[in-house]
Length: 81
Length: 221
Image (cartoon, rainbow over all chains, first blue to last red; front, top):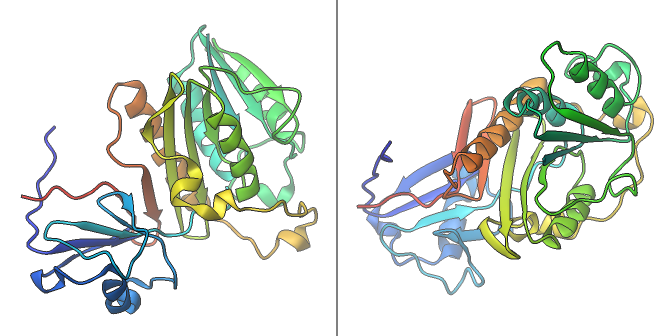
């Protein structure tokens, strides 16, 4: 079955099970800036690891986001079982 | 013979094990069940058992007692790592342990194997995650090592085992969360063994919103 395509003018941001589509105004912002803007919306913990299109971001203050990027803030792994 | 090694037979392991048995119940499967714990009354609301015995032996007895059981089952009543079972080339390793240090140890052992499939899950009270990786011919073929996205696993330190119900009272869990994580783990393995290698490396779940979300990049036109 073909995957549903998502038209994104800006950026998709994820944290845990939550994903939000961000408008084009977020294009060009750094990961650090977006993390700050979304911290309360996504309940991001301070210092969360971020990935862009699955690749870990080494320097969040230097990495800028492009149209169509998927930005994920990694939620700590569940420890129990 | 395919070895399916289930490490940790608590909430998650106990939910995924019947699925694994049902899916792989044939003469070519060797189910190896590893856990050093015994069932306790406090487990009764979210784990399946009839006796207070060692989890690995109790599960082995239960599965072998099924009329249609065909697979070989070995119980290892010990915590991993144990001299009673060394992970082997070609193993399918299913991790349902209850702490990051154990995940770290298993992850490191599996990285040393040339061919292995690893599926791992963990949860907190209402949310959790499942990860996987496949090593083939000594290379990482798909997924990510457990500590790549989660340094908290790679840096985990050994903690004293909590032994009393009072010690563990602050760590409640829900069957719903255990089961959600186990189902996602089973789905990942099902897809891998049917040739549909996931394009994600992790799935997060949450029982309140009843959502699961992969970390695959979105398709963008």
